[in-house]
Length: 293
Image (cartoon, rainbow, N blue to C red):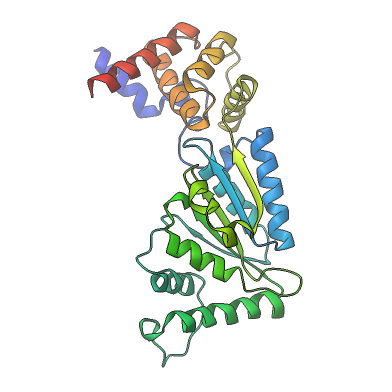
């Protein structure tokens, strides 16, 4: 009977039983749930300034789970509001060769070529020329800003990084013709630090750090509000939030995952709120699961 009751709860959505309109702690990078901590807000604001000024290359670094991908989706959301922005985002930046990388750019930016020309027959120089002509037309003649955003940039190999550096050579006296944003894990930095010609082109660099305990509480409150929480009681006690911070060390992705598990347990156990003991119980269970694996 208990199993049937639990199944009914999940059928209607555990979050609705707690007074939410939407799932509050999903780990998908929804820009509507982007919490603008002081660090994240500063990084996003400075990044938008760099793009508007067409300064060229920006690099955002951060450990796994610090919110880079969600910030990237928020950036795309902001860019979508502007009619003078042309952008493409690369989610998996692995390319077998420079030719493959350049062909991908031409296809994704919808760069027009003659019907008599086949991309596979063009060499690297000809592919670069096509991209440069496109950038000149869009940036100088149409006054558009063209951007390439690369997520998971730590996966870039030296050949593709060099190809990006060469693209940054396309410029006027005032600005770069293409704006490049690299968002990657900390392993990206050792890759680029040895490339003097690449490092010199970085206009803005920022490293995202985990949240402190106050921002952890603010993140939880923010996401609950975004999810339309209608409960009258304090769902997470102050002690529970302190324990969530201890267990997650302030990493947004870990905070969301732990809060999701804790709220499901609240529904299963018919509890009214989350206390420290429940957070510890779930965390210890996860540790034991990892050990057994």
